[in-house]
Image (cartoon, rainbow, N blue to C red; front, side, top):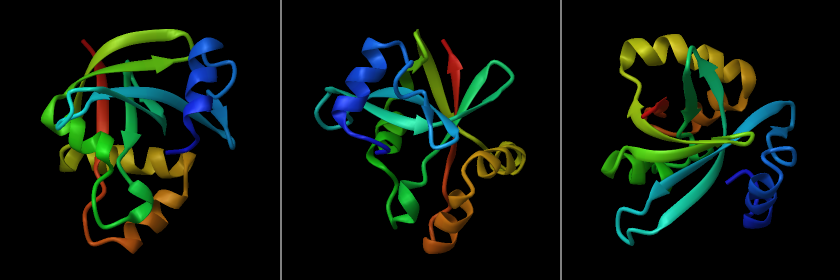
Length: 133
């Protein structure tokens, strides 16, 4: 996670005035349903837009396993997204090879460390597209 629960709370309370802009990039809040617990889990993630869609990367810092939020949305792709004060239901899908080839450079332009993370792990790092429901 980029920052802790207190920062998520402040993002929500301020409609993103605190938390949206972070280290020269932009952050959204993604809420998934825990695949084991059924509880809502919110994760701040770097994003970019692609038309009307939002794009995030399941890098987990290059760790060997996918991040929990990604496992949750694979199990249930119905998610909630907050960008600034805009909160909306969305459906998530993992970009196919063609989409990823197009979106990966956009994401590494906003956060160059994604390329480094990919060299640290054998798993292909997923790119996820979030489309309003």
